Image 1 (spheres, rainbow, N blue to C red):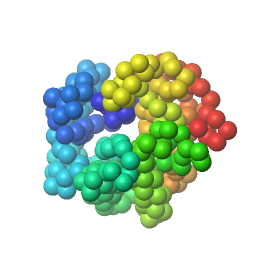
Image 2 (cartoon, rainbow, N blue to C red):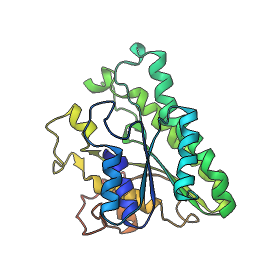
Image 3 (cartoon, rainbow, N blue to C red):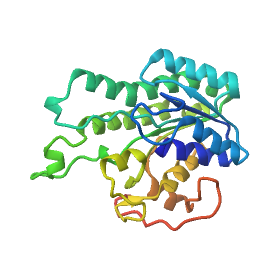
Image 4 (cartoon, helix red, strand yellow):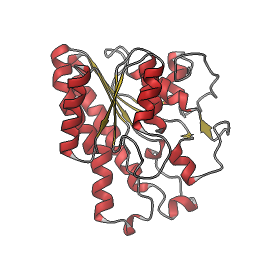
Length: 269
């Protein structure tokens, strides 16, 4: 659901065969709407090709199996998008060791491990694209005084893991540049109205200027998953600034139409 589903649908609209990976094929462990099978069905209804793979990326065994199943079903992997995230909220001093382990395993280690598993074949073919989804929360909170949300815990642990992932991404880009592989990190410029966000804020609406359309994230991910690796790699990109830089409108998830986007701010966000 959410960003992962949107990115998969947009890539599939441009001809990518999509391997969709999540913890469940049908009912969500968190009771959120949307299932992996439904995303695959939408892709196939539009003439695309998709396979749904049940796997928990916090498990090393599941990660290895997911890559094997993808290669068996669809062939060599050209594009890897890591969008999984675990995000406990609360004061850092009150979070548990399990919170820390699950956050960094899901958000950082899983991204590196999946990259390690797909990179050798990409290097042999001298082509490939890796996109790690990060977050605008990597920006440090302003203060003192600090906003109440930040002072009460906010999303500091999640933000720290995404900051680590951003730095890991640029390092991996440097190491794989000579093999013709683009490695980039992508963050929404503003919050995106997804099922997960609606659970936290039921009043959120996509046309609210505080949010950006999910199509912008999907289009920016497509741009990074089809760019010239010699020119666009090692970036920690924000959606709206990237699309403006490339002169690229956001299209619908089916690849049709184009929508106006609010300009990015002076700082790229």
